[in-house]
Length: 423
Image (cartoon, rainbow, N blue to C red):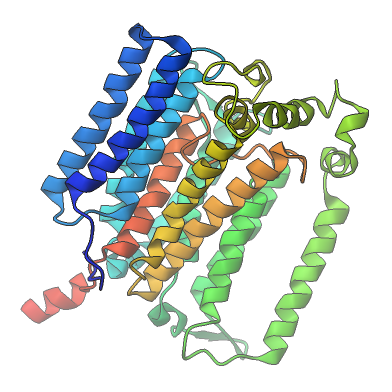
C-alpha cells in the first residue's frame, strides 16, 4: 500500500460502519413491508456480502482501501434500492452483478497496479479497443449498441470506457518518445488517442446513440491536458491556439451535423408535450417533488411504472421513495470514489492519468443522468455508476474502480529493469 501520513482505519471499524448504514436502510424497509421472506433474503445477502468482502480483503491486504470500502457500501445500498422500487422483490440479478463488479475491481487493480507493466501492455489495449468496436459493428445488428444473446443482452460500449481510460493514460517516458515525419515532431501515443477518439465519435454517430459521447470526449480532453502539463513540456502558444481552434470547429460541426432527434431534444419543451416527448422527464420531476426531502417510503413510489425508471431516471426514483436528502447522499458517496484518490495522491504519472480518466467518466455520467432527470439537459441514456440497473454498466464501473485502487496502492518497480538487474 502507498504510505500515508494519516493512520488508516482498520477493517473491523470500516465493516462496522458499513453494517450500520445497511442495517438502518433495512429497518426502513421493514417499516414499509414488515418482515417477510423477501426482506430476509435481501438482508442476509447484503450483510453476508459486507462481512465476506471485508474478511477476504483483510486476509489479502493489511490496510483497508477507501475504494473497497465505498464499493461495498454503495453496492449494498444499490441492491436495497433496486429491490424496493415500486414494491419488494429481492433484486438477485443486480446483486450478483454487484458482486461481480467487486471482483472485477480486484482484477483490474492487479492488472494496473504496476504502471510500467500496464503501459507496456498498451498495444494490447489498442487491440482490445478495436475488437470491441468491431463487435459493436458486426454483432449488434443494424445500428445498435446491444448484443442480444437471448438470455442476456450485452452492451460492448460500456466496456470500451475502461479500455479508453487505459489508452488515455500516459507517462512522461512515453511523452518524451517523439518521432519526426516530414519535419514534424509528434508523439505516437498522442496520435493513437486522437484516432481512438475519432473512431468513438464516428461509432456513436453511426449507432445513433450520442449519449455517451461527452464521457469519451471528457476522458480524451483530460488525457491531453495531462500530456501538456508534465514538468518538462514546453508550451507553445501556436499549439494552444491551434487546439482551441480545432475544439471550436469540432463543436460547430457537431452542432450542425447532429442528427434530427438530437436537435429536437435540445429545443423541445417537455411541458408542451407531457404525454409525448416530455413524458419521462415530467414524471421524473414530479416524482422528485412528491418525494420531498425524506420520500414516500420504500416501495411506495409510482415512477417505477415509467420506462427507464431503474436506469436513466433512477435518481428520481430514489428521490421519490427515499427522499431528496438520500438521493443527494447517494450521489456524494459515488463521487467519493474518484475523490478518494485525494487521500493518497498517485505516485506515478501514469496512475494520475488513470485516476483523472475514471473521475471524468464518473462525474460526466452522473451529471448527464441527474441533469437529464431534472430537465436541465435532454435525456442521454447514460447510467449512474453502481446505482442504475444494468450488468454491463456495473461490471464496467467495477473495472474503473480498480484503476482508482491501483493508483492508491501502486507497485512502482519496473519488472523489466528488475529482471535485468537480477540477471
